[in-house]
Image 1 (spheres, helix red, strand yellow):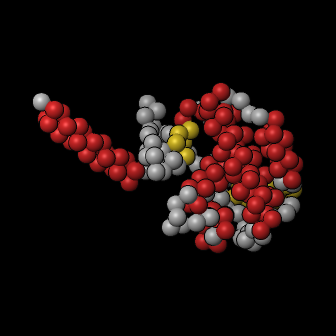
Image 2 (cartoon, protein in one colour):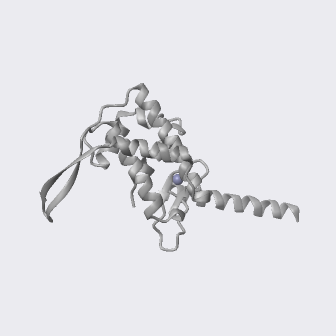
Image 3 (cartoon, protein in one colour):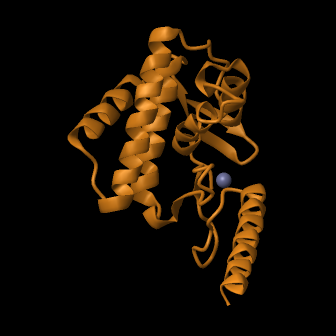
Length: 186
Ligand SMILES: [Zn+2]
């Protein structure tokens, strides 16, 4: 299950990994993000927009942690979400698709205001229509990537196979080290 708000919050992962840098200032990352979410090509954010996006990302990351902790959002978060929802203005049109006629929402302005309103809407959808316990942080301490755990028994602990394998190797080594220590203590 994919959420644009989680992809957006996860963009912080790149700035915490030195080899990548700030994803929101990286044209390749921005292009793949907008393509994934079927948005029109968007100009790179200027410095003011970039600062605002980073602030929104930090706010949502904190808000997600607080919803997971006690199910609550601060007034600041609610005011910010409403602000961004308000700025995403849509018109509507009828489109003919393979499945028949459908109503399509068309953003009036396709810039970052629209992206931010989509992120705000997705965040509210995530915390109101989905299971909060399934929102997980990768347990690799060097990772912390956020994902929605789709496993049947809610056992997902890592964001992908590389983190899973890495942690398996680490646990194996840790066990070996402890065994060795135990041996020397005898
Ligand atoms: Zn991970």
